[in-house]
Length: 318
Length: 248
Ligand SMILES: Cc1cc2nc3c(=O)[nH]c(=O)nc-3n(C[C@H](O)[C@H](O)[C@H](O)COP(=O)(O)OP(=O)(O)OC[C@H]3O[C@@H](n4cnc5c(N)ncnc54)[C@H](O)[C@@H]3O)c2cc1C
Image (cartoon, rainbow over all chains, first blue to last red; front, side, top):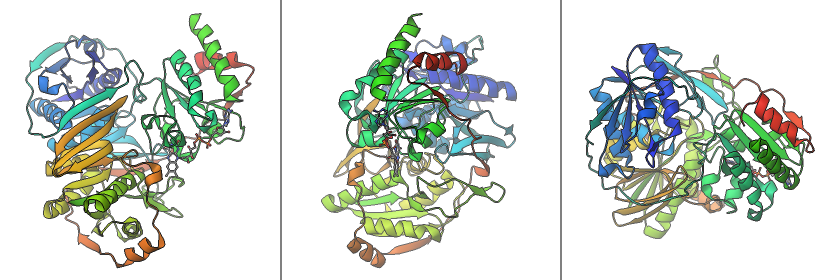
């Protein structure tokens, strides 16, 4: 028996979210008294997983895995899970992990709980807390199956170091029949993504127009943050759709969320609510965002933000 | 070309979320229901294929008769016919099995579902359906063109966009971008009148396996009041974020 995690990597590096999965998987493995196994694809360097509680890495390498194919990735994770009689498979909330999770659930005849926000409340049956209604509520779900998949919400457990002696086993890829081919991947390099960011800086209609977005970008750069925006901002084409956060956009679960010129409509707040600390900068003291925020500045973004950037730069240099 | 659009009947985005029966079920009292926004983007894309490529568009929901108003709205938007699978589902897998059962009989070329619903946010149904049918699956889909039995699609990935190609049949997880907000079709009087004449068929459920069940709901604990910092005292904000919140 084992706990299996899918440790995602990119450009030869294990992603940060994988270490959160490893930490969470470690806690499950300790509670159940079984080993923690990580699956990696085309990833040479796996030592850091051993520093975060993983005992065994099953390293699957194949040219056909260079492009992400949900069916093929799911098939390979399923094979590892079956070979090791996994009781639980833990996946992240990345776009790719959420893509393959339901396919994996069918392949393993497993139960699947997405948006899990904490360690299970019990193991027999498996009982987990999940966010629902786009973070307006939680539910407690029972999963009474031989194998269960947990989709862990980002930043809900944290990263904990726990060095183990790591065994790395190489395994061949299991092929699948699929006519699906990746033609092109366009990715902004060197930019923090909303899914992985510790800090997200978000701009709303209060910024008046796309020409003012340097304020958001400079603030984000200073903090090493990802940039995001409200829905109307992407609808008007001021910013790309990928930056739209909220109930109908991307969810945000960062440690710090800074909203500039965003009113705080219920649909916006729903999507960003699970961020730990929220800061609002808005010139209207009545803006609903102030009710949802931890810290707020009532003021004109065009004055406050440049000031904040300068002071933060000075702070960082200390 | 036959298209099936899977519709989830969900509380309006502004709904207050409350629970009844000792917090074991969602309180629908005073709640307005709408087409799940992600499904609505998918439905609009399907209607375009109906108008431009002669596709036949069926909408389906798994739910009790309270969902019929939402299906009628889909018919008013332009769908050719509607199916309601008569079951109050317990989890995403149960929904996927019901849909798979219909799809096996009807051989749709394209099946579109929202990438996730805004009530349970499971993001399970389209992927499970694709796996049960062994169809190609593309989620977070923001672009789709179909020519013969070739599909080309783009999907949003973390930090970018991926373009893929594949053969039909295909299951799509729809979201904004597949069509824009401004493209959503608002039913007109004629559409609403026609919708009354269009077929809405009730189908018996097969009642498959249930793999998860919700036993209780909880609301987030109430939040403390915001700490206001003067616009002239940015240093204080930095100090609070560093020393109190410990996030920078
Ligand atoms: C079905 C549905 C789904 C939706 N989904 C989403 C979603 O996922 N995400 C989302 O964001 N929205 C969503 N919305 C839209 C939402 O209701 C709001 O319309 C939207 O969030 C408002 O965006 P905003 O805050 O940028 O703009 P506004 O509401 O116009 O707010 C702009 C704010 O900027 C402030 N401001 C103006 N000038 C300045 C200045 N100089 N300095 C500082 N502040 C200034 C104003 O006081 C105001 O509070 C949805 C709506 C519907 C109906």
